[in-house]
Length: 337
Image (tube, rainbow, N blue to C red):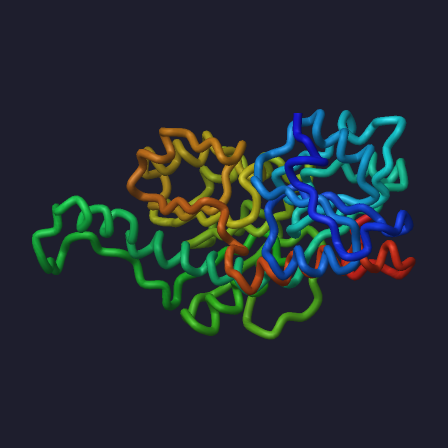
C-alpha cells in the first residue's frame, strides 16, 4: 500500500491552515513545479516516482482536494466511482486525456484540465527527427557502425531517401500536426496533404486537404499521425488503411500508440509492405513487442515527444496554474471538462 503520510509528503509553508487545499502529485515533477505547488498548497509528492495501484489512486481521491497526475495514471469509472471522494479537480500533466473517463468525471462534477500548447514545438521537432531518421536509415546505419560492420564509404550501400519534393501526409491537423507540416514544408521543401475531421481554418503554408484518411495514405511518401487518443480514434489507422500506403513510404507516429493497429503496422514493416517508420508511442506502453524491437527498418523512441527540460517545466507550471485558478475560483487556463 502506498503510504501517503510517510513516503511522499512535503508540506508547504502554509501547512497549519486547514483551509489550504491538499494536492497529491502522482509522479516525480521538476523542482520548479514542486516549489510552486508548495508555495500555494499542502502537497504530497511522489519522491520515489513509483506507479500508483488502483487502490492507491482511490485512496488519493479520498484524501486530496486535487490531484496532479500524468498519462500513466488511468482514472477509469471504476476508480472514480467512490462515495467518499474528496478530490474536486484532476490536473493532468500532458495534452492527451484519454487516461481519464471524461464523461464520468463530468457527471460527478470533477474538473479535468490538461497542458496543451506548451509541448507543440518539442513534439513537432521530434516528428521531424523521426521522419529524417526513418528516411535516412539512421538506426540501421548506426547499428552497423556500433557493431563494427562498417567497412568504409560506399556509393551504393545504405542509401536513404531525399525529402525535397516528397509528399508528407498529416493525419490530424491540430497544433502539433500543423507545426510538423510547417517545418516539413518550409525547412525540408516537402509538399503537404492532410486530413482532419473538423474544419481547421486558414494555415500559413501550402497544404492541401484530403477527403479521407485513405486518400492521405495513398498519396503520401511519409505519413505522420497526430491524432488525440480518445476512444473514437482507437485503432483508427487499421490494416486496411495501412495497406493503402505506397511500398516505398514511411509511417511516423508521435501521438498515441492506441490509434494504430500495432500488429498490422509491424507486419507491414516486417514484410516491407512499407519501407520503414519512426515511432515514439506504442500500444500498451511500456511493453514493446519483441517482433517490433527486432526490426531494423524502424526507429523506436520511448515516448519522449515533450521531453525537454524547458517543456516539462512549462507543462508542470501550467498544471499548477490550473489548480491555483480552480481553488481561487477563477477560470482554469486549460479546462477540458
